[in-house]
Length: 164
Image (cartoon, rainbow, N blue to C red; front, side, top):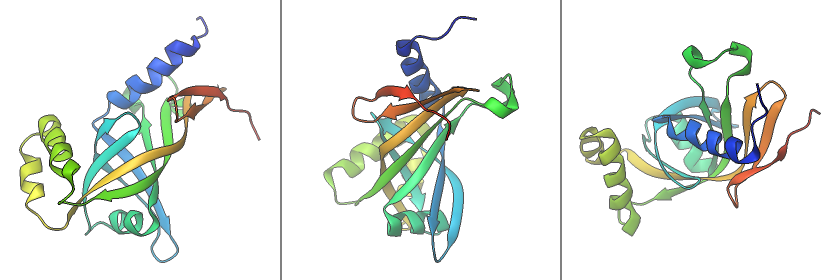
């Protein structure tokens, strides 16, 4: 098996993200503790948009902390080794896009195009909020000994990650 080129690895981590319809969310606060969940998403570059309910603990934490971690991971059925699943993880800053904001309807239309009429129903519910998660740092794990930092400014892989 040949070693993947830098360009191939960059393409592969984006393909992994684009192969997913939902992302895994991790958030934490002193009051509520660690929370994990998932949400369907759309993306533009390394900005990820989710439409989530304030009734979920993770939504409240993200709104308070203005940050979260997200993960995209290879499905178990597709992995050759369960201990080395391919994954992309980003630490993100969070911004809520208010219903009155010019981008609100544009992003919700993008979600409706991707996920169907359920979005129109959710849009009518006042507890749902459109959140923009912007990657501030990240890494891509291709497999054992194949972990790379992601330069979120370019966005491309910047360097292999070393063991600590």
